[in-house]
Length: 318
Image (cartoon, rainbow, N blue to C red; front, side):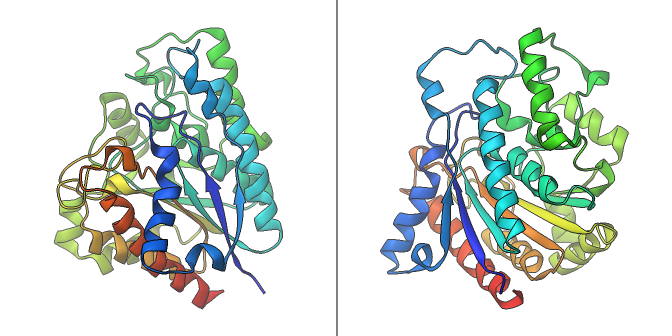
């Protein structure tokens, strides 16, 4: 019988600020304080990280520590593929959002011939590349690796050959690129983007449900529209970055907090709806950073409640 397996990925080498590696631990603190047995309930896998690279300078200006991320991608892809091969459900709890590229690589490694849809619930589009990034932080690039794009039409940087070589390894991880087509990507709550990303989104017609549109149409209608748009996909991956939520309403306990986001109740609705959907075969929660939380672990508390509830919906359908 299929079971949920927890994948703990504490990599934070893709972020611009430190502390996302502690996000999984922050969730465990909340569970402990609630006397919850959540983390003892499921078999768990830990992904080997490369966080020691944070103690050294990086040679990669436009893709910081990309050499370590190649290893993280491979480690992640291997574990995700293994869990799916056992017909189980990988529920991924990660540090920074760069981890998501490895998760998607693992899904496609196991199901190379299946069409994958992506629901990206985030304040950011994360489709920068070494050719377009303003910061060099790779947590702004995971979806671009899955899409197999360089976005050269919006190029502003000239990355060195060693950066390009590693970037191509990320895109080609598992021997498949692209892993996702642009028409099979849906954004929810994306509201903090740069010009190269905006240009890519416009050129490729990627749908973004803004917070205003969600509140105008209603959450249920948006959920149904997302399912309809991805109806031709064989499987769907959901990526939930906690910065999709309003940082004033929740907390700033995340690497790049942005105002005017989803309420916790709205985020809960979408995660519940997608957890119930039989096409969804992997959900990932990312970017909880207790070091930045001005409300003493409030982000982890909110995220844990969301996690616990949508996990029940996954269990019910498995």
